[in-house]
Length: 253
Image 1 (cartoon, rainbow, N blue to C red):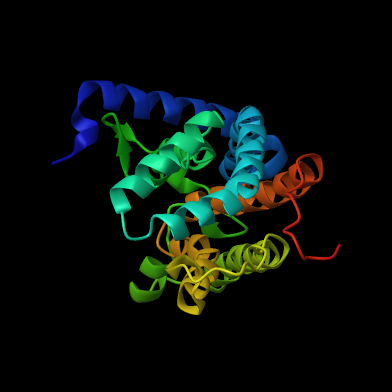
Image 2 (tube, rainbow, N blue to C red):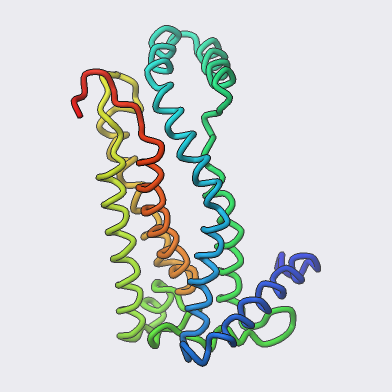
């Protein structure tokens, strides 16, 4: 079943196509066949700029969660044998601080539709019953509608495709490593399963999930993800200076 055959979604996809194709046409004298790729970059920057207030809220929420962490650990020690009481006490603590354990997740949720639309725009040969001209665009010779997995296993991978995807994935891995090192949680004296070595390794591995995801999506979506992770890292570093986390007791600075 094609959900984009549903009229409202067909209209939405066609509107997104028209906007991106129009922007690509404006950029074509400057970028040539890579005009659509430049349009994707500009759209990404616009989306992230619009989400700056949400990023500020996310930084504030992270600061609040860090401040509440000792009290939450105390609640976990006190009520570890009574999960219902523990949940009630934790919710009451969050409520008293006017926050929630899910505060700060909006940037990820808000971008999901954009990634979904970009993904769809660059995998469909036609949009609303007309040819999808976006698929004729490339980035330095790598087609925007090709994923790395499909190119490799479909036998259509070209040196340009491998080089462009390799560069984007390398950037994502580098950003993930910097993020892992710079924003590594402070060690705490806690026997919670969340602080076990295994869970810490899992948490560290999650930083690289975007790079893994990028090999399965069209190049246009991978480009969006690359710009997004770079923006996110720079924004987090700036906001961490504005909203620093409290230093745990016993940790020297």
